[in-house]
Amino acid sequence: MSAGRVMGTETEYAIADPQDPGADPRALALRLVRAAAHPDLAHIRWDYGGEDPVNDARGGRLPRTAAAPSMLTDAPGARLIDVAAPNGARIYVDHAHPEYASAETVNAFDALVQDRAGDRMMAQAAERAGGLALYKNNVDGKGAAWGSHENYLMDRAVPFARVAALMTIHFVTRQIYTGSGRVGLGPRSEEAGFQLSQRADYLTSRIGLQTTFGRPIINTRDESHAGPDSRRLHVIVGDANRLDVPLVLKLGTTDLLLGLLESEGDSTRQIDELLDRWTLDDPVSALHTVSRDVTLVKPLALANGGCADALTIQRALLDAARQARRDADQPGCADDRVLNLWGQVLEDLTVVRSGDDEDRLAMTDQAGRLEWLLKWQLLERLRRRRAIPDWSDPRLAALDLAWARVDPGRDLPWRLRGSILRLADPGQITKAMDQGPEQTRAWCRSQLLHRCPQAVRAVSWSRVILEEQGPEGEPRTRVVDLSDPLSHTRSSCRDDRDIYCS
Figure 1 (cartoon, rainbow, N blue to C red):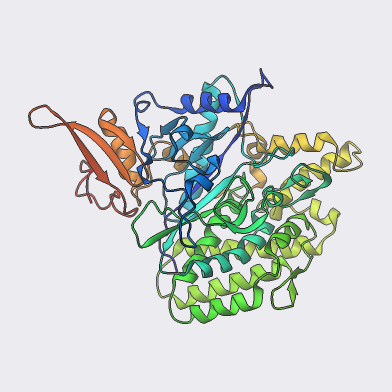
Figure 2: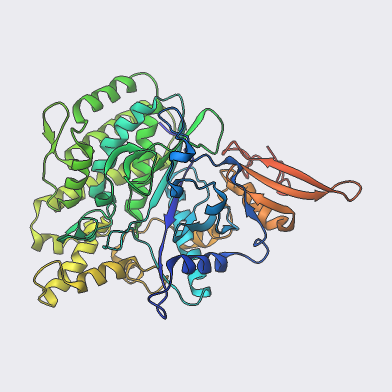
């Protein structure tokens, strides 16, 4: 099992100017990202030397001439503006959206803290940019979608085909507890209704390299930002979450299953059994079915000719992770907490499935852990209070959008905080806005930005480029190699002043 997997999140935010509803979103994104730049760090550029967007995990490379322009993130024309955040994160414009890519962490709970720090930093930047409205969601209901991505570092020795096979089963079915809920069915909300996931309707293929069209369940972009023995699994299938539990479980359950793939011995047989029993016949169709099934009972066709519902499959994955945890003779506090939460939400879902709409409206504890259920309760109460006959009413879409508004201390999740299970300490979030995680290379990146910002010329995930004065006062370039994500940590330094330690 994993004992400190490097992971992180990337969040694209929707943005609007309340004073100018027709403003160009690209211009608004530039305004916000510029406002996010600390004055001492504004001169620092992002180093694109390690970017490799056309390398495919299945083998080979996509010719750049065949790639959509949106895929070429390393192209000069794509480099609108990047900001090195003081906590070691990256803030930038991605197409027409401001994006926050969190600093590297080593477990799902720390990743949650970094993600929430990003929400606060981006909200502050939106305010400084002239009172812009910031939204953490994935769709506009008119055909456009944007991402909330996950990244996991794993052992490259695991055959990618096995990674894709197990992760497909997981990503299709985990929506039942990671979905953030959405008003509307179809990419353009062609049908009225409510579904579990915002992202599902925009995923149309099983596997592929692209992220902005023909979006796949398994993304094959292969750039680890680490050494040759590591692979970065880039996940584009998840929702943007406002509640803590679904975000921790989105990251933590995936971490545990990747650990299962990496472990030796009986796990090979165990994974073979999981794949033989639970591989889906049509994963894309199953993804859409799960998202649209608020009853949680619809069967999914399996490749072996049988069928099973998403909750049953998730129970099997949890049982496999629990068995591997029992077999692993090593401490794993974060892993154990994830397993406990995973078991709890599957119990919650069993209760939700057994009840009718009246029962579900009264489920306070379960709604504090299941974001889609809490959102459904808010919307259903509004429907009843205003005698709204169906889900096509624009007032429901407006409340759905209001849920996504990031406005710390005033937004809907904050007002409902008494009924929501919180897993991130507010003090830790405040600290994480300024300091990189101490267990990864992000700590060194953050320290360099704090202690010698004028010497820093460029940063990336895997290196920092400094320009210093030589013995005779001549300029001298120095590269701090951060290719090992678990080096240059706080504990690896000889003392607090040694920020170049290896």
